[in-house]
Length: 124
Image 1 (spheres, helix red, strand yellow):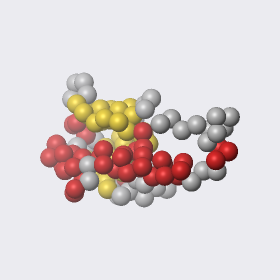
Image 2 (cartoon, rainbow, N blue to C red):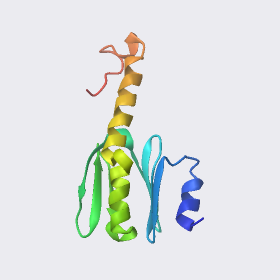
Image 3 (spheres, one colour):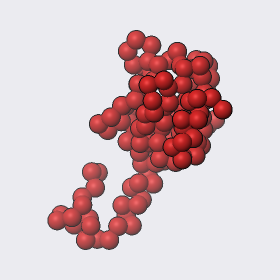
């Protein structure tokens, strides 16, 4: 087990899909996109991911609501990273959309008093 995977395993989350390269470890869990490198562990909630695209200076930018995750392309073999992002039929954005739908379904099951104007109001 590499140092990156060891750091990920200490989080106690299970990877649904994972990718390890010479510069880091990337995993999709039930709720997060997790990136581990020498700088530490960074997470982005799947249900908050809105866009995945090219970042600045050789990076991949995963944009979320309020937060973003910048992944250095040199951390992974390029073809393996592309395959990871496509995910065997489910893209990273596909994982994010699924997580968002599950979160929205959870709101539908909330008691009406929590959804009233005086209580919690969903952002959509």
